[in-house]
Length: 100
Image (cartoon, rainbow, N blue to C red):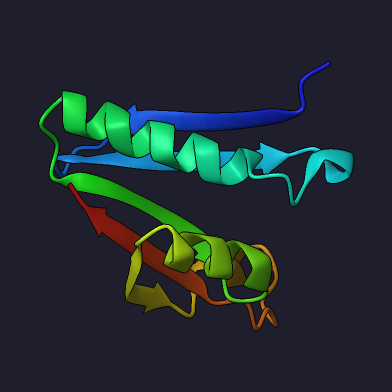
């Protein structure tokens, strides 16, 4: 049984890139996502990367609150990113960064 998972890569821009972070519904609000984010930060620091970056959606408020509480800053957005999937989408891609 996988209860939490993170996908992390060494990004082209010198940042670690969190590509996916998921916690099973019944295990949320127990600090697992925060622990995975902190492990990602430690991984980036151990490789002397500039920091950690990720993208989430404007309608995912709990994720945005988590990243902000973990020291990430909102640095950019893209209001067209999801319109290729749905031409009427109001979702906005939010780009979060945490410096090492």
